[in-house]
Length: 516
Image (cartoon, rainbow, N blue to C red; front, top):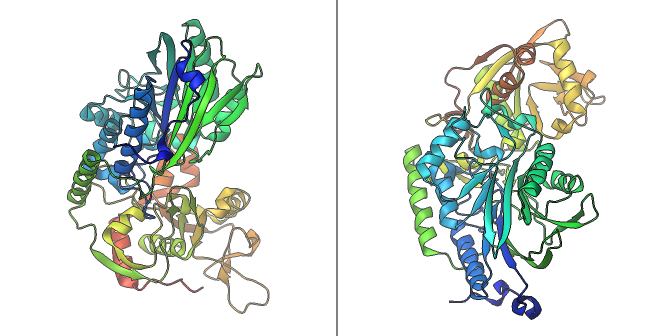
């Protein structure tokens, strides 16, 4: 049964009937993050996404147009469905969707390279996963599993898809010490030169580096014909046309995140960089789209696998909240330093029995509306762990001198962290106020900061609690610097975040904003 006209391929009869036209359809997604059921807004979902993809393929096939389905990475960790079958189902879902090639994203190796290798082998993937700038593949058992590129013969034309993974330093720690990620732009230029030597007719950069870096990549290149991107969760309603070094406009594509959108590009492939973009559409995956029954069955089984992993009913009510549990809304925007941020910072400080407790808003999962809070809501809001069988991240406890603490606060205040970090236990004395108020990195000068209503003493040591993944990552990346910053670092016993969060929600229900 044909879908509504929104999904019809609108092609010029000139292109369809021309004997010289060598048309190719590129279907693309990115940053799926295992949102098997879509988001809490009711949008997205793999079963509806599959329906659209199959219809686009069928309509192209009816016009004898071949299709490549490319995914811009981060198909794995991000939603609680990642726990289904210990991460294997996140990969199997790519095959069920019909993805031909995906690039490795930073959330896809979150548990390390060898764990990714295990997942890929168990999934028995048909989908190709690529990355050209990851070093140490052999040591991580990814050598044969993670090629730099894949070649296709499309109507006698050689089409190559190569992958680039974000090389931002703070995402690399799960790969250490066995692997690292080279600069994506330098690797991209090397891949382009190699493709030219290999006689490639149409070169696609499948990237997980973000839109800004995609634009820079094109501006530095000569022979890349198309960029299909991810990482920045950008919904491009039309391709971002960017001129390369020789003045040719190259399309850059990206389709939001969380299974909310899918894009379809029709290209007429011509030699010598003269390919023509014929048509581009991006489709919203909404509730009007019927669900593919096979994919619906797969998602239902994944739901049951997830419950089995936690050994808890997903809809078990554990408390009530008069405030929303802040997090990502439809995979993109989120509020910072909210009432819920303050609660998590307080919980962290109480668990560590420290002077200060830190909460990083970027770690939040999905936003949960005010009302009954279920066990599943709690996991969806904080879906982070380090190894299978963990009960979430743990709380780390460290000490820092007052001198260094003030330096750290000043550095944070002048960076993006000022909008990301909530600190419990830190106050500020404001003129006209009889009592200190909660310190705000964005509004209050660091010299006004107080602990236990006393100014920070440079010669004194203070204790800090924070998610253990922060010092863990710093130590793996920087070693000596980590020891300097996180002096006397210890993991707090019995401090797994999920039991802590559940106990805190039950004890403080109904949740309200904390008072200073």
